[in-house]
Image 1 (tube, one colour):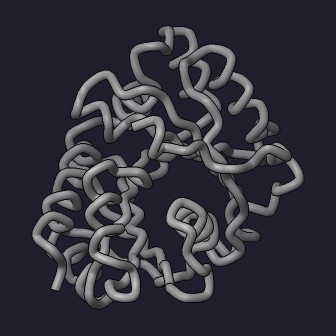
Image 2: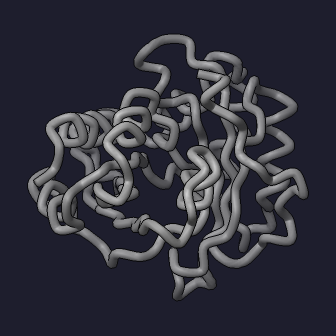
Length: 232
């Protein structure tokens, strides 16, 4: 059974990505500091990929059932690498003592645009109720993601440099997961974080920039996540 608060959070992410166009989602994710020119440029470089959140079910099937209830087709469940490492570092957990898994749900919005939600799932226990409470309350891992088409010649670093130079985002770690989009060589990603302007904007304060393939050599050396517990 899925906790009522997690069910509400999944419904909220679903509402946001269904009610907004791709362009509106990119604009909201970039925040008030992004100029029209920057929004145009990043819209050329990236496509909206998904909205994401971390939930704490008793069973993985509980999340898949909710995705289907919301009208999503659930994909294959794969292990998390990057977010699992972030969670372990945040709370001083033994990485081998718990599992964190990912499932993607896909659907089509009313305007015909494809939509995807990414759900990170940590079973409780072994994750404690106090950790689950803090993660839900502060939405540390909630984010929206854009995808760079590296085949067009654009790179993660090109987008990252633009974000850091022209908006109030700062780097928030990243990594490579060989299990996600495995058929295309896995997924390389970078996270960014900015100050939230309101309670609603809190859901948009983190942005993921991702691409298919292993481009971990492009990730910065200082690839540790920003300490959100001090930032919140």
